[in-house]
Image (cartoon, rainbow, N blue to C red):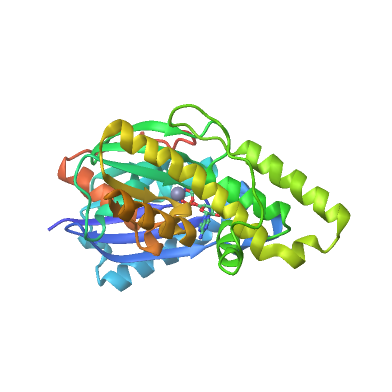
Length: 333
Ligand code: KG4
Ligand code: ZN
């Protein structure tokens, strides 16, 4: 039997999970509401909140899984990419725990873990599959050849899809993180109400900075004419912005499928929680005959279950690291 403790602290969620023989038994997520007042994650505050949250989150993970800390076989932690001060908290805890219990230490790449969230529950994709990974910091199309053999075949040249959501929300005066709020308002709006430009980027890469600028100008122009423009039209504006972000993402995904001739398609990362994207991908998959994999909501945004499952697959290969390991703000694969 293999019991893995997974720890995630790359941004503003402190999370701990227990995985037993590849099955998740607990996944505790402590959110940090403090950042809402600042319109974005404040790194120093995130780091301090991780320090407060990490021990209660881990204790809760043990308690829900009905496991004692002496039974853990290995500890897996997010090494990067992320905010260095946040990563340091999870990394330091994981190192100390492994040292105290004399058990192996396993480093996990956060972006790979988002993709490996598809191995938490059934149905699981077969290799190779294509994964559109969309989060607050990344937008990538990844060709997943095996658990840890992944190739980035397309990525954003500027903002990530999550940033496109969050920055648009900020322009509309919504609090951080604005992605889920745009999703919520969009549900009662018309996606055809306004049309925002689609960037012309060659190949499989993305760009969202032009969209952000066009939204800013659009809002400034309309608010000048009518100061209540946003309040009066919020659902329509949100639905139109969301629709454009989704169309940019899915256009590149279609292109990747044609190029690689792979029709198992997955989405991962925080933006994969977006209901419009989930529905549009499901519909497109049915039309095109793709096998589509969409994670459960709790495994889309940052969580330790995905770190524990990635850790479990590294544990099977005895892929361990030693105490000299340090977190990395930037990390690719
Ligand atoms: O993966 P994640 O939790 O953290 C990072 O690794 O970045 O992704 C966070 C991003 C944020 O930009 C947030 O606004 C976005 O995911 N997000 C959403 C939704 N839920 C989270 N964006 C659109 N619609 C949602 N429902
Ligand atoms: Zn993430």
